[in-house]
Amino acid sequence: QVHLAESGGGLAQAGGSLRLSCAASNSVYAMGWFRQAPGKERELIVAIDYNGDYPYYAHSVKGRFTISRNNANRTAYLQMNSLKPEDTAIYYCATSFRMSTILNGEYDYLGQGSQVTVSS
Image 1 (tube, rainbow, N blue to C red):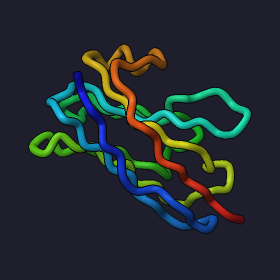
Image 2 (cartoon, rainbow, N blue to C red; image 1 turned 180 degrees about the vertical axis):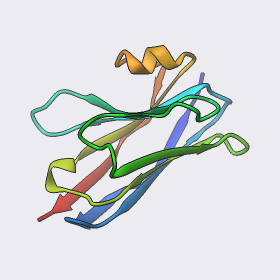
Image 3 (cartoon, rainbow, N blue to C red; image 1 turned 90 degrees about the horizontal axis):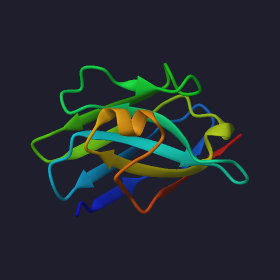
Protein backbone atom coordinates (compact mmCIF):
# COMPACT_ATOMS: atom_id res chain seq x y z
CA GLN A 1 0.00 0.00 0.00
CA VAL A 2 1.28 3.45 -0.93
CA HIS A 3 -0.04 6.61 0.66
CA LEU A 4 0.30 9.86 -1.25
CA ALA A 5 0.30 13.11 0.72
CA GLU A 6 -0.43 16.13 -1.43
CA SER A 7 0.22 19.76 -0.59
CA GLY A 8 0.18 23.09 -2.36
CA GLY A 9 -2.44 24.42 -4.70
CA GLY A 10 -4.88 27.15 -3.80
CA LEU A 11 -5.87 30.35 -5.55
CA ALA A 12 -3.85 32.24 -8.16
CA GLN A 13 -4.48 34.97 -10.68
CA ALA A 14 -4.16 34.35 -14.38
CA GLY A 15 -0.49 34.48 -15.32
CA GLY A 16 0.56 33.51 -11.83
CA SER A 17 2.25 30.40 -10.47
CA LEU A 18 1.56 27.62 -8.00
CA ARG A 19 3.44 24.51 -6.94
CA LEU A 20 2.08 21.14 -5.93
CA SER A 21 3.97 18.52 -3.96
CA CYS A 22 3.26 14.83 -3.59
CA ALA A 23 5.09 12.73 -1.02
CA ALA A 24 4.87 8.95 -1.27
CA SER A 25 5.07 6.69 1.77
CA ASN A 26 7.06 4.10 -0.18
CA SER A 27 9.43 4.12 -3.12
CA VAL A 28 7.46 4.29 -6.34
CA TYR A 29 8.33 4.15 -10.00
CA ALA A 30 6.16 6.46 -12.08
CA MET A 31 4.48 9.55 -10.68
CA GLY A 32 2.16 12.06 -12.24
CA TRP A 33 -0.82 14.30 -11.91
CA PHE A 34 -4.33 14.01 -13.24
CA ARG A 35 -6.79 16.87 -13.05
CA GLN A 36 -10.55 17.06 -13.18
CA ALA A 37 -12.45 20.23 -13.91
CA PRO A 38 -16.16 20.58 -13.08
CA GLY A 39 -18.26 18.66 -15.58
CA LYS A 40 -15.22 17.17 -17.31
CA GLU A 41 -13.47 13.85 -17.24
CA ARG A 42 -10.27 13.32 -15.32
CA GLU A 43 -7.24 13.80 -17.60
CA LEU A 44 -3.56 13.00 -17.28
CA ILE A 45 -1.47 16.15 -17.57
CA VAL A 46 2.06 15.21 -16.50
CA ALA A 47 4.03 12.09 -15.64
CA ILE A 48 7.61 11.20 -14.84
CA ASP A 49 9.48 7.93 -14.53
CA TYR A 50 11.89 7.04 -11.71
CA ASN A 51 14.96 8.58 -13.35
CA GLY A 52 13.10 11.54 -14.74
CA ASP A 53 14.49 10.98 -18.21
CA TYR A 54 11.29 11.10 -20.24
CA PRO A 55 8.66 13.32 -18.65
CA TYR A 56 5.25 13.43 -20.28
CA TYR A 57 3.26 16.64 -20.72
CA ALA A 58 -0.22 17.00 -22.11
CA HIS A 59 -0.50 19.54 -24.90
CA SER A 60 -2.62 21.79 -22.71
CA VAL A 61 0.19 22.33 -20.17
CA LYS A 62 3.36 21.83 -22.17
CA GLY A 63 5.72 24.76 -21.83
CA ARG A 64 3.95 26.06 -18.71
CA PHE A 65 4.08 23.17 -16.23
CA THR A 66 7.17 21.27 -15.08
CA ILE A 67 7.22 17.99 -13.21
CA SER A 68 10.24 16.91 -11.19
CA ARG A 69 11.00 14.48 -8.42
CA ASN A 70 13.39 13.87 -5.57
CA ASN A 71 13.75 10.13 -5.01
CA ALA A 72 15.64 10.62 -1.76
CA ASN A 73 12.48 11.94 -0.12
CA ARG A 74 10.05 10.14 -2.47
CA THR A 75 8.45 13.42 -3.49
CA ALA A 76 7.27 14.74 -6.85
CA TYR A 77 6.70 18.39 -7.62
CA LEU A 78 4.53 20.14 -10.16
CA GLN A 79 5.53 23.71 -10.90
CA MET A 80 2.69 25.50 -12.65
CA ASN A 81 3.48 28.79 -14.38
CA SER A 82 1.51 31.10 -16.65
CA LEU A 83 -1.70 29.78 -15.15
CA LYS A 84 -4.96 30.20 -17.03
CA PRO A 85 -8.54 30.13 -15.77
CA GLU A 86 -9.01 26.86 -17.68
CA ASP A 87 -6.41 25.28 -15.40
CA THR A 88 -8.96 25.45 -12.59
CA ALA A 89 -9.53 21.88 -11.42
CA ILE A 90 -8.85 19.37 -8.68
CA TYR A 91 -5.35 18.02 -9.18
CA TYR A 92 -4.70 14.43 -8.17
CA CYS A 93 -1.25 12.99 -7.63
CA ALA A 94 -0.93 9.41 -8.88
CA THR A 95 1.67 6.71 -8.92
CA SER A 96 2.10 3.38 -10.62
CA PHE A 97 4.63 0.58 -10.85
CA ARG A 98 4.91 1.09 -14.61
CA MET A 99 5.18 4.29 -16.61
CA SER A 100 2.92 2.72 -19.23
CA THR A 101 0.12 2.45 -16.67
CA ILE A 102 0.00 6.18 -16.06
CA LEU A 103 0.46 6.98 -19.75
CA ASN A 104 -2.62 4.84 -20.41
CA GLY A 105 -4.58 7.05 -18.05
CA GLU A 106 -4.58 4.58 -15.18
CA TYR A 107 -2.80 4.40 -11.82
CA ASP A 108 -2.13 2.13 -8.88
CA TYR A 109 -2.54 4.77 -6.17
CA LEU A 110 -4.20 8.18 -6.14
CA GLY A 111 -3.85 11.09 -3.72
CA GLN A 112 -6.72 12.93 -2.10
CA GLY A 113 -6.60 15.83 -4.54
CA SER A 114 -5.73 19.52 -4.30
CA GLN A 115 -7.96 22.33 -5.51
CA VAL A 116 -6.37 24.80 -7.90
CA THR A 117 -8.40 27.86 -8.79
CA VAL A 118 -7.21 30.45 -11.29
CA SER A 119 -9.06 33.74 -11.48
CA SER A 120 -9.12 35.92 -14.58
